[in-house]
Length: 122
Image (cartoon, rainbow, N blue to C red; front, side, top):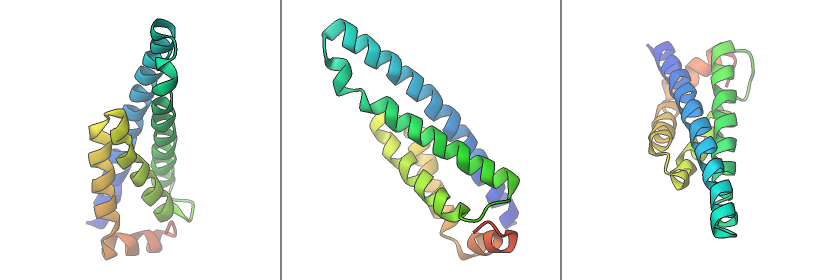
């Protein structure tokens, strides 16, 4: 049963990574457009594509670790990526924020932690 929860986590991080990639591209386009059209507005919103890009990279790292089941430290990376997904609310990416909260709730269950320990990826 808890193997299914790890698979759900893997799918959540894959979807969140794709959404963060799309969000980063959109905000990058808006940053460039804002810089050209409004002489400096792009500098104000320039941090948003950076947040989305970092969150995207972390999501794909977690997905890769859950897919391969070959690295320790996956639990702490999941926590860190989930927190960055929650921070992604600043980029108006509500879905990744919900996925981040869901992932934190799922990994807080002792059974899921034990499954990670059994697989050697905790």
